[in-house]
Image (cartoon, rainbow, N blue to C red; front, side):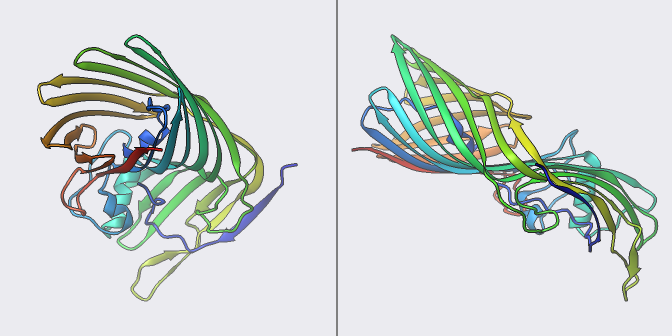
Length: 372
């Protein structure tokens, strides 16, 4: 039976909002089973991260440049590893993946920018601040099979996993500066978790269990190939009991420090309990078209993952015997990537800026493959 209680507590609350650690590369960890030669194996690590409103480094400390505005600013990160092995038409894999998606309201992004830059809030302006977070860590196994019919290849992939690190929630409210050193705020919190990072409290950790289906297809010609994949078909992760917090935070308790600044000791009141919880993910899809032009292979890729759409173009060529080099561009985040492959090993790195203090997108992927 679910347990619950009402509570009230006073906490020291900073106006600076810090997202959990965030980090297209890792999206490939969840793709359908590879079409691999029988008796082969591969191992890889990949990570991808971007931030719409401010550079990634600004989420941690400081950055250069101003604030980029959009209708729904997002912060996204995914990182993970995968090992594949093929035997006949079957492909088996084990994988580990963490994903984080944060969405801010435009006012929430502006408030984050002002507070992280340590700038004063405009007096009399009210910010309708909002933040949502969806974060999950999963470890699982996959079993896939491929069927070839002439130039057409079809694939199906079943996945099972356990889930930890659940962080699902929203913070909505109003914040304003009533003077040069005084502020008011009123926030509502809806928070579901198995690690309480909001109040930094220990909670019983319970694993979730999930499963999903992925489908893929490819059609190849003499000098071209088209691929399409859909994953997260019927994806869901379930918990029998997951802690829930519903709370309100008000700036009705405060004191003034020696410098004359108002420091809040807000009253936070609400409800804590447990309930069954299920996460159902929307279907994600990807399509890729490759074409050979002499010694250069060109690629165009479109991908949709939840609310995120990505488009990539890439060119691959061999400047030296045995060495393949790729140059790619991801349009959403203006991210340029360079890659190298030699023998059975590969490495790809990318960023939207050469400055760590300005970049809003990062990507890295590395791996090795062979035969037993």
